[in-house]
Figure 1 (cartoon, rainbow, N blue to C red):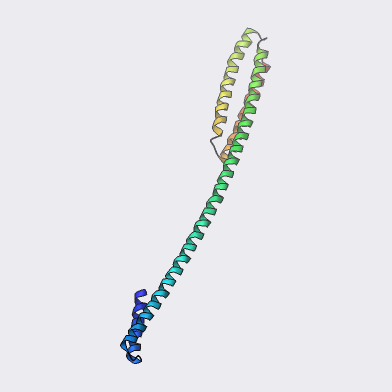
Figure 2 (cartoon, helix red, strand yellow):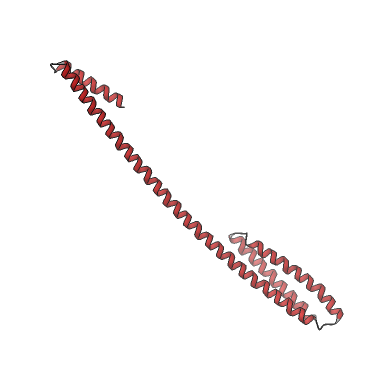
Length: 176
């Protein structure tokens, strides 16, 4: 683009010299001045374009940084919520397991006064209950690694099995 402008200016100067200038030296001076003016305008236009491009780039970077900061805030909030949900789940599960352990302990106390045959049957039954309780405890721990609705569904199923286990302990207790 700059080369074309230079050629036009030079051609204009030569044409002016041929048709109206009296002195070829004046024509060359006018051509040089026109060339300098064209170079100056080209440099100004290039500088302005570079400035505009830099401003646009800076603005785009700023917007990208703001968007990243916003995304980071959302990620941190989601992590906090997830940590809270896991803590709530852990507390809920511990409470449920504690309830089962309490029932087992009460039943063991009552079994101490039972007849030897009944106590033998009790030991076998309570061993099975303790194994099931340990399996539920492990499943509860694995819930912390799950996400979203999967946790809710698994929690509901776990709650049902805990209730069944409590019922089984009460049934064993009635046999004492």
